[in-house]
Length: 340
Image 1 (spheres, rainbow, N blue to C red):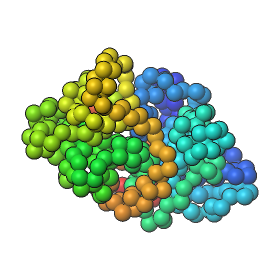
Image 2 (cartoon, rainbow, N blue to C red):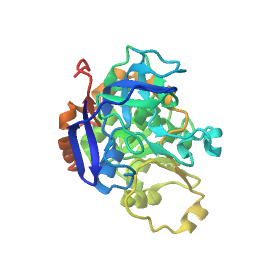
Image 3 (cartoon, one colour):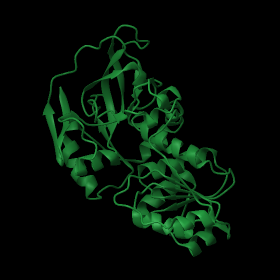
C-alpha cells in the first residue's frame, strides 16, 4: 500500500509498504480517508524528539472507515470513525483515573505505532471513535486538533463574560477561537504576527485582532484586564510578552510546543497571582470535538490551506516549515472519493 514513513530526522519518504495484517481480537483495521499534518509532525521531523521506532508511518490526525474487525469488537465494517491520537495503556494509575493524556507510558500513533499517512492503519478498538457517516472526511480529520483546543479551553476555564486573549492563530489557536465563539460571551482577542491569519480566524470566530501590547489590549477591552490567555505559539519571546501584558489573578494556558527555555522570575507569578497551566493533548474531549466538527464542518473546511495526495506529503513538510501556508490546516486526501 502507499504510505509516508519517517525514517529519521528530516528523512520522510513516500513509498510502497506491506499492508497491515488482519486485525486480531480487540483490534480494528481502518481504510484511511483523510489525515491532517500537525505542527508536532513538523517538529518531530525537524528534531527527532519523539522518534521511538524507525521507520514509522507518520500521522495522528486521522479519519476513515472500518475495513475489518477482530473478535470482540463492537464496530462493523463500513462504520465511519476518527482515531484517538493518544496511545495509552489503560492500566496505569492515571489511565484508571481517566487521565489518558498523562498515561505513564503515553505515546502517539504515528510514533509508537504506525499512523494514518497511509491507505490503511491498524488500531486497538479503544483508540477508535464513531463519527457520523455524513461528516466530511476533511472536517473529521480536524476532530483531533479540535479536541486539543477544547481541552485547552477547559483547563483555562474562563469566566463566561471575560475577555480571552489567544496568542497564535495557527491550527490550535484558530480552533480555540472558533470553539470559544460557540459558547463564550466575552470578547475574543487574537494576536499573531501574521495579519492574514488573524483576519481568517476573526472572520469565523467574531474575534478581534490586537497587538501583543498592554495599551492595545486595554483599548480593545475598554480598560478591563485580560485574565485569561491561551498561548498557542510555544514562542519564548511571545511568553515573555504575555507575562508583561497579562492582568493580576490571571491564568495562562500553555498549549504550544516550545523550543528553548524561559528565564522566569517566579516572584512575578507569586506577587501577581498568575497561574501557569499546562495543556497536553486532550482528556475526554474527542467525542465533543467530533460533534462540533459535524455542526461546523463547512467552517472547518473553509480553514483548510490545501488538500494534497500522499505523494505530495514530503514536499508539503518543506513548504510548511518554510511558513508557506495561507490556511490553518493541510489535509491529505487518501481515499479516492475524499472531496477536494
